[in-house]
Length: 385
Image 1 (cartoon, rainbow, N blue to C red):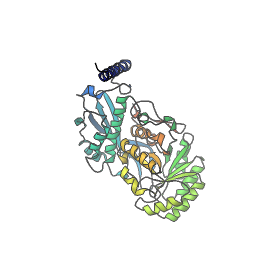
Image 2 (tube, rainbow, N blue to C red):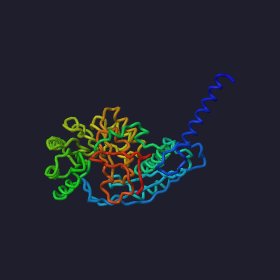
Image 3 (cartoon, rainbow, N blue to C red):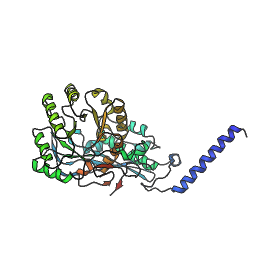
Image 4 (cartoon, one colour):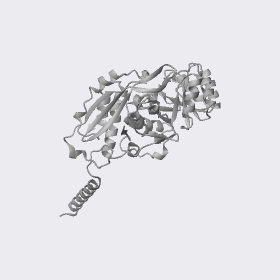
């Protein structure tokens, strides 16, 4: 046998022995949470199966922002099953997204995952899903999250580790206090002040200073404010930002209407605290158009179609020298835990959507002394309750 052929044969034999030893040590369990080496080529007959059901989220308190109030959020829970493994996903639809249970259900009925033999071909699968319709970002996010959860489970690893992130570097998450009467704001602040290290306060109406002063009666925690496009006069907005900084505000999210790019840029240039885009940013393609108008961007899975695009947005924004925040809608621990996989790489996190509801179906990422804590479970780290 020639030397080259011997080396090739010996190498293949060694690889086969190593794989056999690993498989023997780990077993061949189909339990969702048990890591095991997985070779999709050994299961050529397996197919992915998608299923879904509506699930209305019940808020613990009425939630008020500059443009609306609500006590519930429509939601659709989905599963992708493959060869004994299950990936979980979620579509949450607050009013401003313009999506509904009906639109999400209609979209998901068009998704045919059975045509794909290999769930590891994430890019091909999600490119197909994204191309089904122009919008429907929440529905696309649900499929994306479930697919990532499935593949992480097949690999036996959480996504923060697959992305090479250090779970010890997760930030503190904000806890959101919506616009309300002083008594209710005081009550909400008292409930959460000893559990978090930073608060997020909704502003944008005519009682902004009252909101902040009421909170300061209870706590001196740092505050992030979200105007939800509620400020209309840039001179007045700048004066308010300086006042807010004096009262412990460390960042401002979407101060003015998203279409007023020049006014937001003017404000960012003069602001003593960073200004983040929220409504002004949805997907990767939007970043070039707002570059220079904001200090940073807020990435939300329901707007950007999920984890695949969120990871691209994070890296693109960093390359442009922008700060990054990861946020959420009102969601179960499913979508929140998916977003949390990105959190070791961001500057700010607003991942409290699961804490605002009373009917969470999952155990996932937790908040310990205000800090995001990632479970070591594979995929997005879920445990079904």
